Amino acid sequence: MARGAGRARPPVGSSAGRSGPSAGSGSRRQARERALSLLYEAESKEQSPASVLAGLPVAPAEFATELVKGVGAHIDELDKWITGYAKDWTIERMPALDRALLRIGVFELLHRPDVPTGAVISEAVELAQRFSTDESSRFVNGMLVRIAESVRPSDAVLASEAEPVDPEAVGADPAEDDHPPTGEVVEDGFNQEG
Image 1 (cartoon, rainbow, N blue to C red):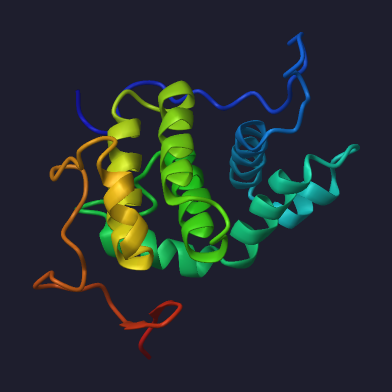
Image 2 (cartoon, helix red, strand yellow; image 1 turned 90 degrees about the vertical axis):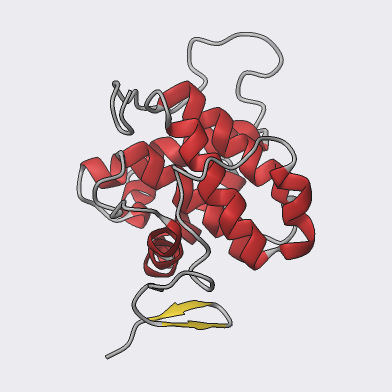
C-alpha cells in the first residue's frame, strides 16, 4: 500500500471511559497522546497550539502542556529538520498525525535532553501504529532515527537497534546528500538563506 494510504484516526484526547489505576494517571505516554490530540486539533482548526491550550476548560498534564507549547514555539525549526530528512515528501503531503508525531519527536530530541532517545522514538512509533496510516510507524521510526543520529549521536545507536530504518521511507542524511535542503546547518538546526 502506498505511503499515506489508509485512514488516519485522530487520537482520543482524554482517558474518559477508561477505568483502572492508569486512567488519568498522567504518565508521559498519556501526555504524549494528549499532546498529539491537541496538536492535531490545532492544525485541523487552523489555530495555534497555544490558543488550543488556552481554550481548554481543564489544563492537560504538565508534560503534555510542555510538548504542545514547545512544538508551537519551535515549529519552524522542527519543520526544517523534518523536511531536511524527508525523502520525496513535503511536510504538507504528510498525514497530519504524522506531522504532529514528528514535531513532538523532533522537539523532544532537540529540546528535552532529559528524555531518552529510545523513549522518544518508541513512543512516537507506538502512537503512529495506534492512530495513523498503515505505514506511518515505519516512516516515523525512520525519520526520528535519522534525526537522532544527527542531534544525539551517542544515543542514536541504541535507538536504531530497535527497528531497522526503511531506506525507502526516509532520505539520506542532508549532510551527506548531493542536494542538501535550502539553508545552512547551524548549531540549533537549519537557518534559512535569504
